[in-house]
Length: 125
Image (cartoon, rainbow, N blue to C red; front, side, top):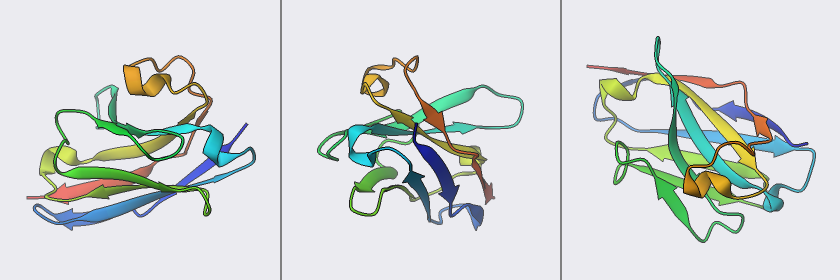
């Protein structure tokens, strides 16, 4: 099983940017599709986006499309979430997840093998 550790969260003003990182250890990172989720206070955990094993394809929730970009560096065992034009409604704990099947690209989250501990992102208005 792969272990995941997120970093890069913090406080930013609306319109600003942050880049989150998720470092993986354990099993072969390149064998996992990776995804980002977020959970705001009192709400369910929501899908943000996903990236394929090779990084050749990515998929985003409508709420972040055009503002967020997921990338990965398999040599560094790290996946990134670049967040631009941040809005107060983006405030949440952000989690990365590892899926060996790629189902996250199709809305199937049942095969997620590992989750990170989360990193807080707060966007002030």
